[in-house]
Structure formats: structure tokens, C-alpha cells
Length: 38
Image 1 (tube, rainbow, N blue to C red):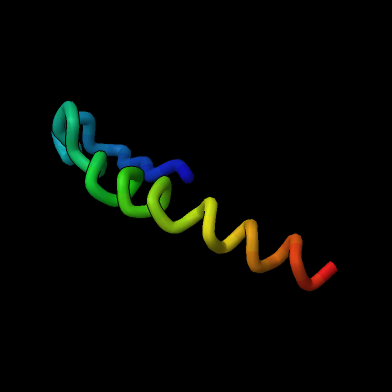
Image 2: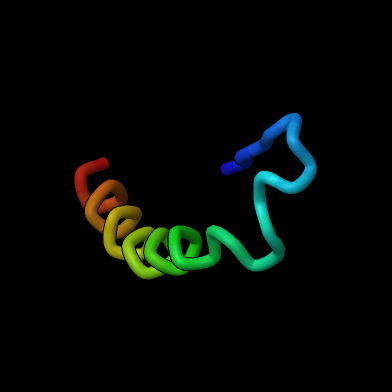
């Protein structure tokens, strides 16, 4: 996932790590469900 802005000061260092953390927590279970269906 990539978020960009033309404004160099729009995003700050470390911003968005919560979203990545939540995705990392959900992804294994979602993949497991998907693999079981196949």
C-alpha cells in the first residue's frame, strides 16, 4: 500500500504505522480462511 502527496510536508515520518500494524494482525487469519476455501 502506498500513499503519496505532492506536498512534501503533508505526511510526517512514522505516520501510518498503525494502519500497517492492523493489516499485519488481520492478514494471517484472512489468508488462512482463503486457503481453506480453495
